[in-house]
Length: 329
Image (cartoon, rainbow, N blue to C red; front, top):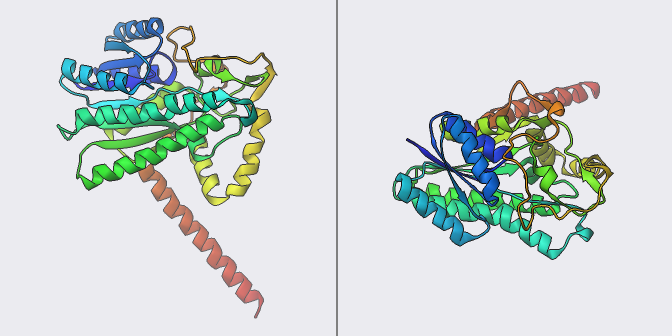
């Protein structure tokens, strides 16, 4: 029976991923800080005929993460997939954030993925088998205001992952590394984030179902690729940043107002300590969730799109060039 470890799996996207694999007959190991919610998540997975085990702890602690890897390997004989999903964030303008805010987001959102990847590789290298999935965000591709700490941490994950992938290629390893870029998703996270503003956080449209993200992770395991973009917004963000970065900067500036709702007192949230709450996949905005025709695309597919776009661009350029040349005759 294949074994998967999912961090940050007591709610939201992590729980959706765990449920997707549990329903497929995998042994699922879920990791999270909040022991009560983690226990609820394990029971939920078992009710769907899944085989689930919970390990409570903070993945910003490298010793804990390393021990998870050892314990899972000892209990089940190895690890086939490790999903680095855990994260936390703080909403607010840079001048309102503290140094501790930045440090803690880096620890939970970036360094947790470093520790998880290293623990997974210790288990996978001897067997030369396995898949590591980094859960990232469209905000790593095109950062947004009020989320500088989170955007920086997710961008750091990209740099780390690309370097480790090159090392695996140099070693002729069969272990795969995939980064999954997520769009805005309807999860409980906005209810738990630290908020340094005086306004409620709004997740802008388009808003997607967490189960779509779980399907993308399943696809990354079944058909490994370098990157997977979930929802049209992630691919468009990457494209805009590449083709017109200055314009993307100005469009991003509009997101200051778009992310703020009605008055709300600043909230400490779950940055340092987990918040109370049920083991729920969905957040409070189900009515805004859309299900796209094409839920996600891989880097292989985007390569084909780039070639097609280049062909169209070249054709337009040649046509324009001929037209200008003809007009001068």
